[in-house]
Image 1 (cartoon, rainbow, N blue to C red):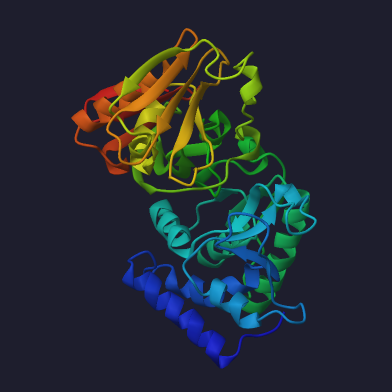
Image 2: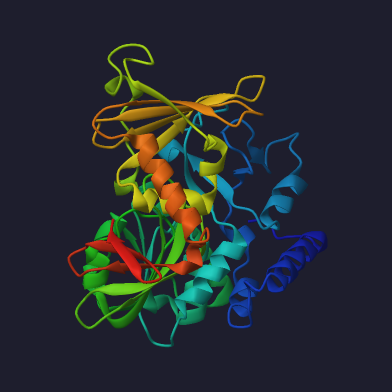
Length: 394
């Protein structure tokens, strides 16, 4: 791989300074940042800051500006590296991002939360590009790091990058496994640390079972409705685990837990409003899309998810609510400047009413952020969210 120029090295130093200033990169992880720089784990074709596969940045294609690639690498942003599980064939075909090189400040804040201890074995779920595994290998020793990737193509590419980085640094290559991350890797138990670079709605019981008592699990967790935070769980003697949420996050789902939502036609047998019950609300659909609010609504209203239609020229749009059980739906129409909004609900569940009650609950508790919530997972996989002294099963 082409070595960076002096200007590019300055960019890496600038990124380090930015991360230190943000207090996400500390003295424990700075040597790893310097030894295994991010550019070694970013492929030639990337989509920095793109919501679709239409604007790739390719540093080797004639006519492209290689400086744009280096700028992205040395910026504290996530970089999409794969679309549609590798089915991307060109602009216009990339619909769903399925791999990324994560935002560096998120990478190092999660590694700091992991609190790596010397000699402990670490399980990483989601190898991706391999950067996170390389950082762990440099800090803890590659023989103590097991990284699992479900996509065999991504796993092979990451393995090549990890080998190249190890040859450069003298580190041992981590144990790389192709398989379902939900299963962990029972062959090398017990683990003292588990870190997931993908989000879950259900923490797999296998992860807890493969941990020693006192082990720490750092995992992005979020409900179906949306909103997601980093949970830092400690495994107990009885096989359960609990702990606080430390920050907000936005990761791609563990592949086996991806949201395969039913299409709108599964809910409406005839055109909207389809005989639904009409009402109005003073709660703007605009307000229920904040990340912390979505998290609270999602954990209070089980099985709720939403879709939003495109905005019209005047800024209005229709928000759709559905339940995963395919029994009920609701809509709420937003028009800028109004203080009342039309609602239609259908089915045994009044989904907008449930959402509004959850919003009122969140507001009534002072609009709590992630740091006021905790997650408990039983050894059998039952999950419970708590806020202060109140808790409920999710």
